[in-house]
Image (tube, rainbow, N blue to C red; front, side, top):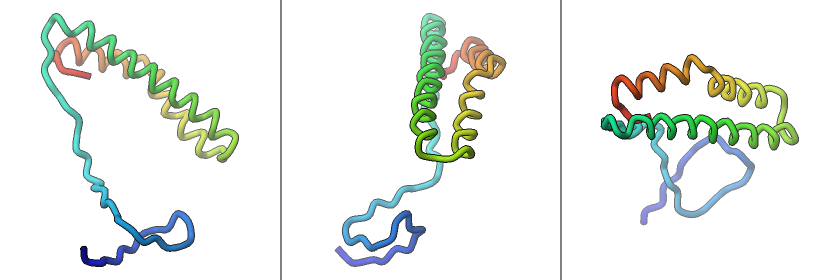
Length: 104
């Protein structure tokens, strides 16, 4: 394998020698598929469970961050929690699932 030199922003001082994995930044999207009438209620429950799981994960992360990081980082995470609590946003997503028969 040929040697190549990469330049990037360092997160810590020092050098590294070894294999590198290049990550693409392009958003690959998410799988979208049509769902049948019999699956709509299950998909809504799956969406609500995902919202709750995300909220719980952010709460857990916030507990850790408050010990180690500053005020600004906490406010960013708290704003994400507010999105998850926005009932209008949640209801619009559920309405889209029910009307368009598309996965969450």
